[in-house]
Length: 166
Image 1 (cartoon, rainbow, N blue to C red):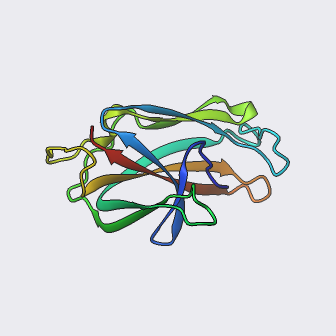
Image 2: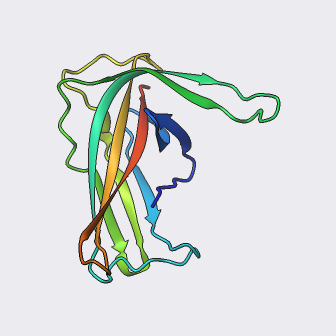
């Protein structure tokens, strides 16, 4: 399973490809999710048992720069992330961070990113497009029961959020 977000850029961090969105501090986001089979048909996430969704987050300090496209692909812009360091201590995961089904039988739901996802402890004084900046890697965990074995099948889908201060 892979998570594809409209308007996201693909980014590779430590060998892991993930969708990456830039957000501004104090903005919230609701991102629709759809589970589909190989033919593009909606998956019934209630059969053989109800799938469960959960969200977690880790905060990193990093330097973000951008490269412009080349002659072949002038519109491509790469996000270059360097000096990646885990923030210590980690902020508390905001209570509003959630992945929820709106219609599990049609595989429809959403991820909610609350406004306080950019909170840090201790508090910092943000500046416009500051480097170092904050990278939050949120992970959606999908758990379902495998119909053949009856065992739990767990998939983790990372989503990087580059926080921009405004």
